[in-house]
Amino acid sequence: MRQRLLTLCLIAGCAVLVAGAAVITASQDKTAPVITIEDKEKEITYKDGDNYEELLADVTAEDNRDGDVTDQIFIDKITVVSDGTRAIVQYAVIDESNNVGTETRMVNYEGTGQAEQNVSQPEAEEPSQEEEAQTEEDTSEETSEDEQAAQEQASAEETQEENTGELTPDGANPAIRLTETSRSIRAGESFDVLSVIDQVVDDQDDAATLSRRIHADGEYNTSVPGTYTIRYYVMDTNNNTSNIEEFTLTVQ
Image (cartoon, rainbow, N blue to C red; front, side):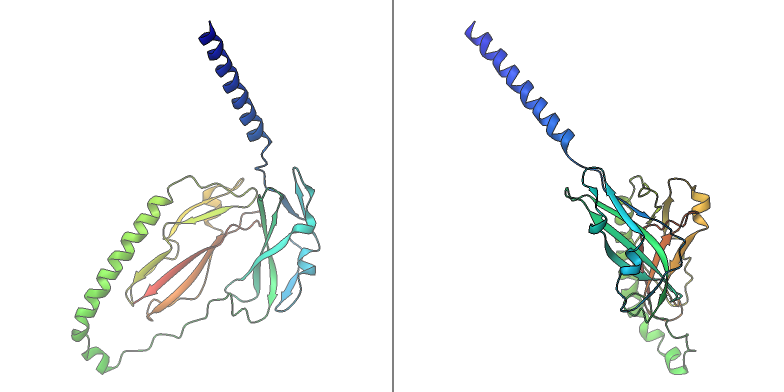
């Protein structure tokens, strides 16, 4: 009888613990605040050295628990696109539970943009007779480059295996994912700039629509050895901008 009573007490205690854990889990805040830009189509020009007053003027944020958190919004990043006349502004806000909400907009840009833009590379020059004469001597070096390329390809395949999960849009913003973050090619070899796109998704637009709105910003020259950075992003038909994925192209 005493053992049966003890068993019942243990069962009751476990039930109380489970119920308490359920209440705690249910009370946890896992919802990120929502940033709203009143007029995304508004013409705004950001100049190097400007404060963020105009960029933040029509931006608000609301959290499901903390309420109005507009005063917590900050500019996370400003990325200048390749034409040098536009920039993507990324906003962020963090609630008291450390949930992060983000939003982006495209603005006009004036300035050097040296910290964010890719620098154009010089045009390829015709090889001299001396350079052609050294081709045979470079055979061993090319073999080494082949081994390096094989290692990078293996690394890229491992990255691709890690990125096989389902890609989902970030709220109203589309999302983009690459098959790899870097690739090496030989000088003169062709490179399809869209060949590294794995997926693009949006809450409204389908993949076919998004595929025509993919941006690949960055200068590169497949005839000139060097390391080039290309920034990929996609904008949906509502001008919402996705995350920015950086890709490194090495021309050997």
